[in-house]
Length: 119
Image 1 (cartoon, helix red, strand yellow):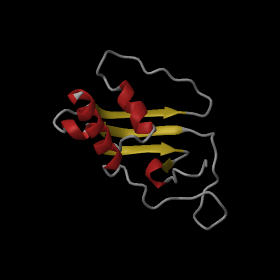
Image 2 (spheres, rainbow, N blue to C red):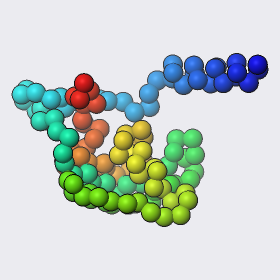
Image 3 (spheres, one colour):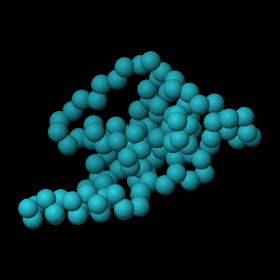
Image 4 (cartoon, rainbow, N blue to C red):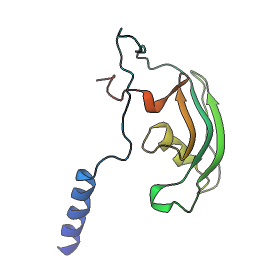
């Protein structure tokens, strides 16, 4: 019973903790000046990405990687355990922001993209 209460506390703490990735300076879908056309097609670029998880700031997971994936291109990330494959995907999905470098979608930094355009 104590484990259930402990787990419930941990889960509720995660729910009320503010998001570390902030969506500031959004570019929204529409025809306003400075807006972009919402699309599900485009290229993804990672430019000189360096990354460490916030809980392990002394361990650099990604040490300066650059990748370009064109529209409709299939890419496989392969390597030994702990080499950063999942971390790269989490950066593209914006679960985290890179420590250094940029993740671009259609040549726009994903930090500038509005996360609600698909609703």
